[in-house]
Image (cartoon, rainbow, N blue to C red; front, side, top):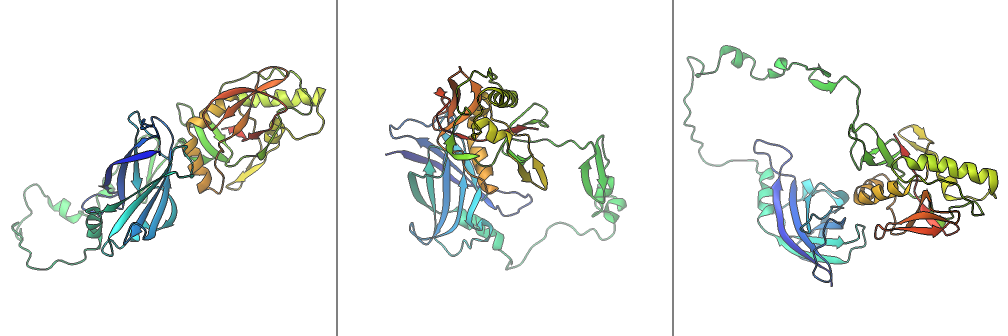
Length: 360
């Protein structure tokens, strides 16, 4: 049986400062496989449930995470900051316990959970209950002196007159604008991170500037599989295999098949080339079949892609073969296995899934 060893549960974090009550809990665990080996540098899927009363009690809060283990097999997540399934972490009545935490884990990075563990939350709920404290009983003894004749040392009359108006002293630097207490940039530059939902899809690679990169569609364009060719095997010379190479490959594949062997069928490159996606009121039509390296980059950021896809009514990248636009020979092209991250040469007449990408 696969095993998960919990090292540390419920270290309080706070999104605010100055004695604010925390709205999240830090959770860490070491992941091991069925042979008791550490699961190292691998995407895993986790579902966290807060159970009320008993280990089989009602789930008052459920969320999902898709973390990556480190070189020691350790995963670190923040409960209360994941992909919400049900409930509201901030409204849990911690006085109405006891409460238990249930952890379900999928070593393949999806939502097919094969590992389950449950333990009781002990001290953490009392710390969280501090946010509901609304009264103080007994005498309050203040030992600071009362300055009724002059300001205390180091405090000027200007400070007293403007104690709640310090934003007037803010000075905008280069590329910054401050208007009515709103601070904003003036250069119009937007940067992106892995997992952002932008430019019609999900960001899975960005350049050093953070302004340009690659996105994949939020769902597969063909879930039953399609062929790489258009009815007959021809050598297209679509050999590009690096980032952005898929765009040129796709144009070559379509042009060669149209000139030599297109029987009118729907095939991988054509599906991507004809894709139209409308997001945020804008339609994107410049999609293409990814190169083998672009599929590899998607695999490296599989967990982030899946989390964003589900959050935006998309679908997981399946544990299946996906066509690349990188050709191997007149009869074979490269395909990528998202089950184990391996690449293969495959007959162009075989059926594989397709997920389109585009550059921005």
